[in-house]
Length: 197
Image (tube, rainbow, N blue to C red; front, top):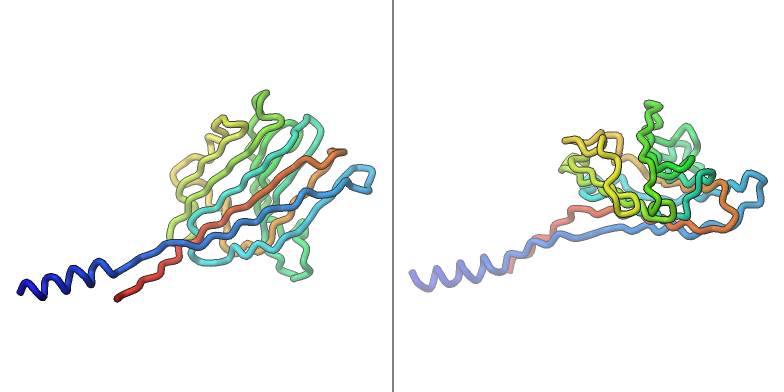
């Protein structure tokens, strides 16, 4: 009996469940635009369309002014041309007209947060926690270190903040002569490895 108990304890201790896997997309600083309106943009393949996305984070750093614009748009490249066209965009996070914003493009809905003085040249951090069906369950955001977008911190937050079918992100900057932005998108997956010895 004692020998059986020891074997069971050893087997139980050898059952390892490991949760890992993440993808970090860092958008390179874009060059000075050759156009009069100073617009420049880039498209990056996102591969967010896994069914086990648990954490979704957007981190933006910029030198914000009342006239410059930085938009981080998410959607699906349905025509597969390698560009996230306007009609393919679902959700946009960013800075426009002296305010941080989150936009539900499909419903023509925009939520804005006025920047504190110390947030003009600050950092925007947005975090979403999804459930097993990749539906957002918890939302947190700070702008310049101050809590922002309180209307999104509902339980649950709006489902359009993240969609599992997204496969591309497009970053667009306007009104900035010297490139200064920094954008990163973090996606963490719930991947389990079970090992029995």
